[in-house]
Image (cartoon, rainbow, N blue to C red):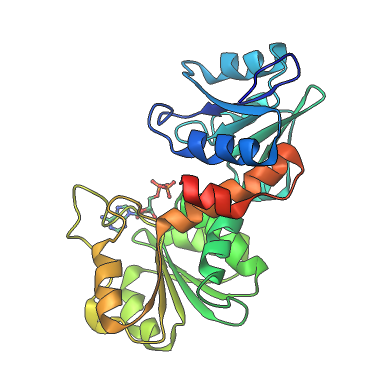
Length: 267
Ligand code: ATR
């Protein structure tokens, strides 16, 4: 990589800045295409000042993750359609001093799903109603998936379902809905380390023909995915969503078609 006076900087804002795999993914893609960009970490202590720095230093763009996805919003100039309806940002582009927030999480998740199954016209059960579920819900609906949102706190499921325009309910409805479902997405934190033996889905409800996606990335193969594999379901791992949300961001950063294979290999 040759840094010079023309190099465009893209910064990473998030608590995982020391361990993120995104540096390898983007920088190897820039190198492969001979693009004069560099993706670098920032240790952000105060998000307002962090955004001021982006303006003052004319940083080209920012990749945003936890804990700044929502707290960064008041300091931006504009949100695109996805960021606005999701209510969270995972990318900021500096358009001649105007900072515009976007969100590729939902579309990235659906791209991951579509590697294994069509979504249009399919019965999709989404578990959870937090930030990740919100991003996925709009994206599944955009693909004409027939969506039902189930959540432990029913009022949260109802609220999201109203925004997205779909069905909702509590987790106890799973037993009734599963036999007719095509796609099941766990977008809760259940199953994440250290509680790797937890799952919201009784394995008796899993059936062949079902595609099961889990947004939990640690462990890669959650208990839900392990049990789904035994039954012969199609599996969608969280790292595919991570790849695709990043691939979509690359296009936003550079305006150039992403070298998906290079990015995949780096990840
Ligand atoms: P994220 O932004 O990563 O989606 P979040 O907004 O905290 O995180 O959302 C976490 C989701 O996991 C919620 O849907 C939460 O359900 P509640 O709305 O009832 O809190 C769900 N969740 C977390 N722990 C859970 C558990 N033990 N059982 C069922 N659902 C759980």
